[in-house]
Length: 173
Image (cartoon, rainbow, N blue to C red; front, side):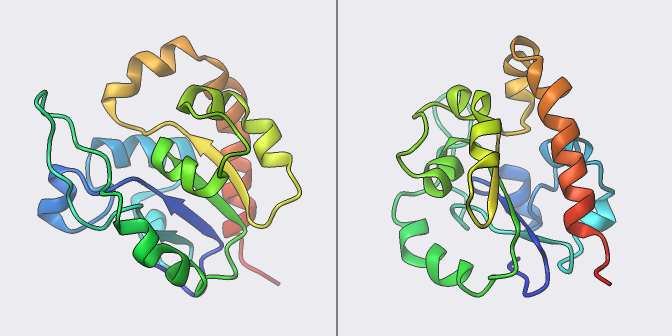
């Protein structure tokens, strides 16, 4: 769902089981949590004038032995991501959701773990880069324990995320 008008890019991982079945990104409890983090309604979230939703892989990668979703296939993003994102130069803010999106958008400059990336969110966000990047954990219920162990995410990062979403989606004069 790339957009020529959206100023916020939601860089997810790959479709999960429910999303694969419906064809609508974040059409599950993870999406509900992400929209809550962002402070937007479902209608706003799926408005292509406001948000470009571009995962690291477009196809459902399958499940592991425990029923969790496999990571995006390695060949997907290198094959199409850069040309697709070149069509969205108006993007001002990237929400890098999960380690796979963070590795792509942050490169080798920051940590190799999701925790170190999200803990470094200020340094990442305040870099002089365009677009600005906010690293986020995946909003899956599987990360509820991570969220409880890292209260800074809710108390410090989420207010900045919501402010930046409001600023980036406000009508231009």
